[in-house]
Image (cartoon, rainbow, N blue to C red; front, top):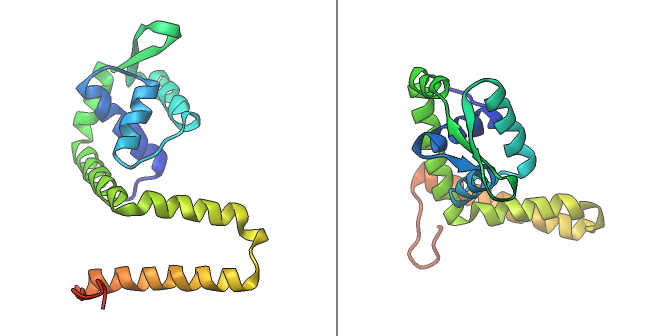
Length: 156
């Protein structure tokens, strides 16, 4: 089952709101704690879309006009009607959380930095980064596909 990132986050938001009403920043924090960094530029338009679709409602407007969102009856029905997809997404979310704890967030940040600074790298630096990325990818595949671990050095 293929799910795009917006749908993935929409379902995660609905799942989180099923547990309790939250404001947008709390939703971003919750997703970030589980390894899925989401910006305000992504979350707030999704919240507006969910509200327009009738899947969530504004529960209250608190301090400094913070809106607290809660799942609507229609949203609960959506989660119920899509229980298999929701379960699959929750499982993927948990896996992403575990992978994030292993260092994927550091790796993603490094790739972001690489993209931002690519033009300033010389050919030797690019070759070395390429070697590191390829080596890391090969070692990960080796562990996954062959179970290769060497107690002295880690990876064989």
